[in-house]
Image (tube, rainbow, N blue to C red):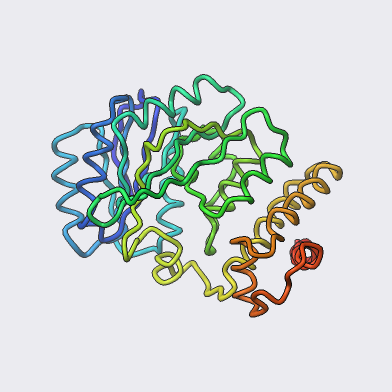
Length: 314
């Protein structure tokens, strides 16, 4: 797979993996190419689409020299298609884009400015507004995490305390992205990716909902897509339980100083082990104990045992 030659002078690489994206692709490309910050190259990796996607891409590439298209000869799976574009991170900054999302014209300029102004930050985001299949705002806003000035346990606590992880689509430093390595191949790998970025540095957030996250009846870039379409993704019936273990294994493998790992472990136990909270409710539904564990102490002990199971397999 080859993208041909790019200018080599842009500050930002935008990478958009796509498979059969004809319904929303033109809107996404239009928004990206209309950004008021124009110093970028846009790479689209077509995962052997069988709909009008190739023609849409050819038309757009013919009209804008910043657009570069490559097409896989066969479907390599969603995770591997994401991973295939990470190699393009040669510019100072890198942005993942999904073909069914949209962006305010000010988005790219604001996150570039945020990274430029925060040398300790590895990732810059805005808050996210949810849109439906018709691109209408639903009124739901997902605030992104903001960890500037916080130590590592606090940064991780802020991350795992939430239950929507759209920071994956923020602007990141390419050198940090390259240091993480290949994209993982399990459900929730995007959350683990954000955790790895959090270990490396701070996340700075612009408190405006300039990223428009499409939540349609069938969102083809969500976890369900990767579970059902990607040959790289084994079936994990305990999605959130497994994710907690994946996250903690990542922290153990990071070889953090022992006091830091201890503090991070305590933070995870307290953030996830909240009876009635979204994390613990999801785990309870998967493990079929639902509301049977009602006290915070018992919930903390349960989560601590999950983390011990994870650490034992590192």
